[in-house]
Image (cartoon, rainbow, N blue to C red; front, side, top):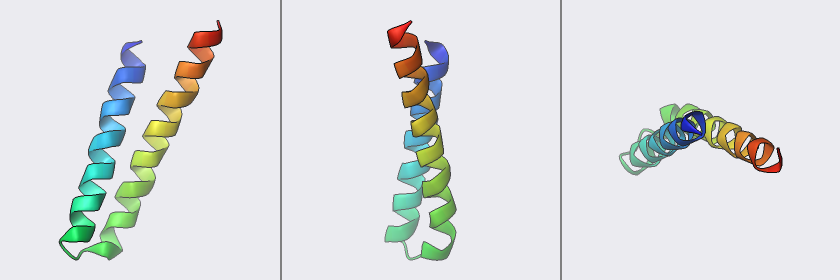
Length: 54
């Protein structure tokens, strides 16, 4: 369960960093942050679904 929480928090931090970067005008560097954040969130969701059904 800890891995799911840690990955969710890290994903949210990456996504927030990407949004803040876009607001500040650094859009060319922010897409990577958004992609990494989405990967962390998707990983956490897939682990949560796998553990919920077990």
